[in-house]
Length: 445
Ligand code: PLP
Image (cartoon, rainbow, N blue to C red; front, side, top):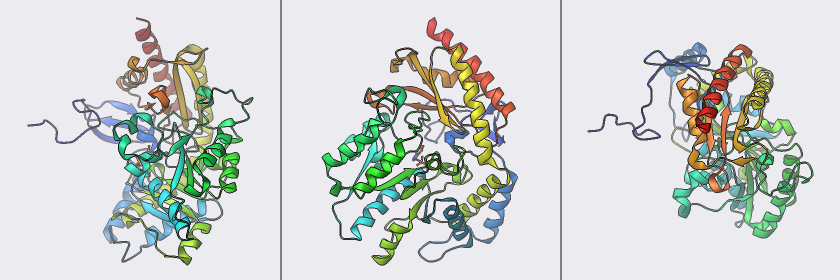
């Protein structure tokens, strides 16, 4: 007989049981406090235990929690779609609700293919993505993901969609140096499109800031404008996967705003519900919706729980809370402070190779040698070690490992809730400082 019937990420590991959370803190049943320095999986954007969200849950549940989207619509889902369309760039006005980021990116791919099919073009069925990327765990989304570790077991079932090099300047896959490279990684997209054939390709998908596979890697400023131009040249749709970056995390509502580039489709998840309910979305441009409306009129996707009013009401309350408390602005200000504090640690610890990020999505890359940028051997398990030292000391950070070609790369993401204060960031830095000191000692001995 098993002690626990719950299948956990690592079988046999002893996971503490969390009893409650408040703000940026989580508390386990033994009373230990943890600073949620990564908002879980970069999700708990408004912090834990917010009363207004609990009230919104109760209010909606008293009326109706579930309706079937093929039979009815609801005020909550209509209002949420309207709010997201207001936030989104000019002509991204239609929203399809799903339950996870993986479903949001997969829906984006299906919509892109359908857009061309509705016009009689049946060959544009491929999507190009980048090595060092993560778009989700279901087979379609994993096919788009250039995350080596997560792909390897299922390779026979996956399409080879990742083809383009990532704009990962610190460890450039093209062995170039910015700015002398002229952002060759963006030009490579055109070469790849020409070799596959633009008539085969429906879309290009990219995370504005690379998350789970690389640890908060933002591209050079010119990158996305070039990508947009290449996509336009070959009639290829541009999907921005904002599952991790969307809804204020980087200091803008959508991270693509940093470069003033407008995608055709945006995938959202994580922060839009801040973890209070499973909810995600695919935002689609008028240009695409007009074609579908003039054609079959049916977006060929959907899930039982899509657009359920219970989750929609929760997301509305989350967005309302974000607006009232100006959390997007706080992400920008405290994010800058966090970066400068992390840079301070970089002076102290040679194993910190790179500090990077946007807003409150910050990354630390750990290397064996900061001059040559040589990564640690994977067997050293440097990220795992740092994670567990931080955990012991009551700080949660997020690992971004195994996403890079050859599975190399040790990075962590620091991304506290957007409610975080400078004083709380100082506490995060204190624990990180002690943890890096312990790790350095471990590595020497
Ligand atoms: N896209 C990005 C950029 C992500 O970071 C993630 C999750 O980490 C996903 C998609 C998949 O989202 P989910 O885990 O909700 O399926």
